[in-house]
Image 1 (cartoon, rainbow, N blue to C red):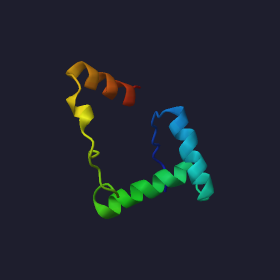
Image 2: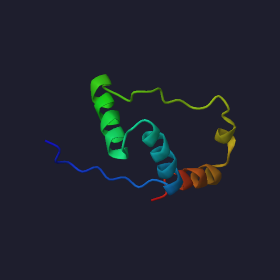
Image 3: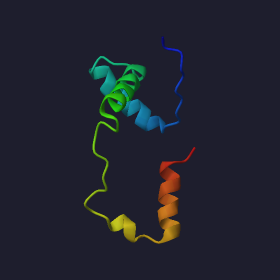
Image 4: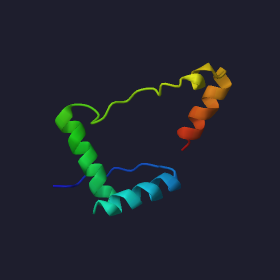
Length: 76
């Protein structure tokens, strides 16, 4: 039974761009999220590698600059 609700805030351009991809795959955003969550459960973790880019120049930013970048990414 599907009785739980998942809500997330994302940038509107990210949502629009990913919906175009899902549409080409014949998926809705909801179906894509279900697939992602099922893969997390099956693999016991994320279904892809998470790593820093090879260009780590952004790590050299000052603390306030790094915080501003993080705030812009995770802005609610």
